[in-house]
Length: 390
Image (tube, rainbow, N blue to C red):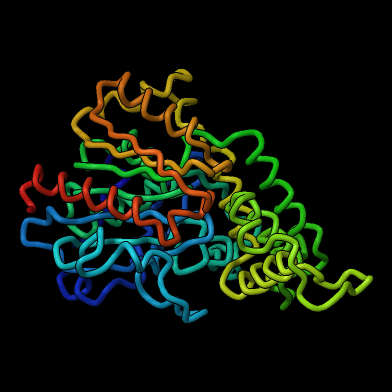
């Protein structure tokens, strides 16, 4: 626990009210990684929404998915697009910023302000590239805990996340249960499956096969493996959707009258995937994609608890849990969410579970899904009453 305590003063009220930025920890407080390596100095990019109350009891940490960042409810500084969860975070919304102080961070290994492979290696003065140490979900959470401590927050009212964000929620419950009042895990799993590892390997190989990857030193060479990264994004994006959603949205519709009789994007679904790949490379770093997907692959919460998932939650009996899944999500299936709930029950934790019927697939938590919003609002409101925040 000492490793999560910052040196120096906590972030002051002026910094909190400014809506975030980048917090730099001094070299005397390195981030110690599961691999045995350390990161120093450590920087964490973060955004805040709402106001922290006097007792610092209304803080909600929102954890992002693989390709997300800290801009959960504000325009993205590169693309200008709305925040990835701006329909959930804001005044009067499920995470009501008139009542709660919402914090979103960029994970370690990311490319939006937090220390990652694109950051400068203090030993060389050049970007880390592949000299950046391997990271885990636990490392990401350890860095978040350092920021939360720096904010002077002893206990989070809630930690909420979907997909990889849900894994961070589970890791928080295992590693820092005394710092949590409630936790919401959406469309996630307690470990990465062989199928998901396989999909990630396809994406990584696409990036590394791009000649412009340059063995990870593309920044020094002044190039970017954009083609490989775009293909990786295209392959991954297919897993975020359901067959029903793809059929409903695209079917076999053509982009024009007749076939091209070549390899242009004849079908609308092809054009959609190419657009997803092309737009992704503008805001994401290829090496960050390699490192974060590897962190996901390494995730197995039970592994460090004698292979018994329930043991990971033995100290989290005072935490209120909500686990949600989507019926058409085949990336992180409902069966995997049920495994989490069974482990929580076996550990004696208070856990609610809801499977939401939808054909939108894994990405449903990003989309307009009224039942998700209502369920999240109800759980947060109930927890707020128990916390004395109502």
